Image: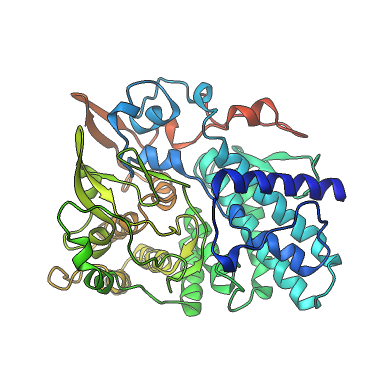
Length: 477
C-alpha cells in the first residue's frame, strides 16, 4: 500500500509542476508528500487536486481547425501540422512523442479514482454515507476519463463493429504494477455506463466544490454517453433529468453589455475580464480541457480563431463578441481570444443538455417534436444572440433541425472535445457527414468523414512500454 501511494503522490507532484503554477484557495488541497491516505479527508484531497481534472484535446482541436495555428508552425512535418492540414500520407505514430500528456494525465487521474474506489471502504473519520458518496464521485470521474480516452484513441462507437474493434487499456487498480487489458469499444462503453449508473444513487444534490460530481453531473454524463452511442431515447431521458437538477443559463448578452466599454476599446486585446468559469451557474462540474491554446503564438486560455471558423458563428452572437476580437497577426487576419479566466473545456454544463435534448426530440420526427426541439434550442439562443439580431428558429424537417442544433452546439463548445465527438458520430450518417475543406498556400485541402485522422494514435511511450499488459495501435499511421 505504501509503495502504491508514494508512486501516485510522485506523479501528482510532477503533474502539478508541469501544468499548474497556482490554484484557487478552495481547490488547493493536495495529498501531503509521502503520507498514506487513511481518512476520508485524505482521499477527498485527490478530487480537490486540479491536476486530476485535465482532459487535453489539443490534436482534436487542431483536426477541426477550431483554433488558429500560425503558418510558421505548419512549414514542417509535426503532429500539429499533420492534423491541422490533414496530411493523410504522413505517419502520426512516428511523430507522436509530443502528445503524451493526453494519455498519461488521463491514466494518472484514473489511478487516483481507482485508489478512492478500492480504498475508501476502509477510510476512517467518516460515516458510511460519506464513503459511498466519495466512491460514487470517483466512479463518475473515472467514467469521464475513460470516455475521453476511448473517444480520442479509438474509433467512433458503432453498434455493428463495437464488439470487434479495440478501445483503450482498462485498469481498475491503483497498484503500480496493475495489469491492463485493451478491451473492445463495446466493453469499454459497458464499463462506463455501469460506473455511472452505479454511482447515481449515492451522488449528492450539490458537490463540496465544483470539482466534485453531483447528481446533475451523473445524469449529464449519461446523456453524453448515450448520445455518442446514438441511443437517443436514453440520451433524452438523462438530459431531461440533468436539467431538472440544473437548467440555469448564463446570459452572454448581459455580460457583453456590462463589459462593452473595455471590449470595444480600439486596438486593445487585453484579457483582464471578470472571470466566470468557476462560478458559472451553468456548470455541473468543472474540468480543464486543453491546457493552453494559441493566440497568434501567445499563450492564452481562449485560443484565436481563423476568419473561416469565426464566420460560422451566427450574426449577433454575444458569446463570440465577448470572447474574440479582430486582429492582424502577420501574415493573417485572425480573431484573437480576449478571455483569460479558467475555461471549463473538459467539464459538463447545462447548454450541452439543452442541445442533447433538442437533437433527441428532433430525431423523433413529427412537427410537434420539431417545434419542441426548436423551443429548446431557442431557449439557449435567447441568452446568446443580441436582441436586435435574434429571431426564433423554426424548421419543418429532422435534417434541418439537427444541422441547426449541431452548429449551435459547435459554436457553444468550440475548442473543446464536444464538436469532435459529434463530428465522429455524425460522420457515420450520410445525411450529416461532411467533408471539411480549406485553402492553404494556394492548395485546396480536405478532410473526409472516413479519414483515419479522426482516430488519434497512442503515444510512442505507451506502445513501447505498455506496463503489465499489451497495447495495439488502433490506426495504421
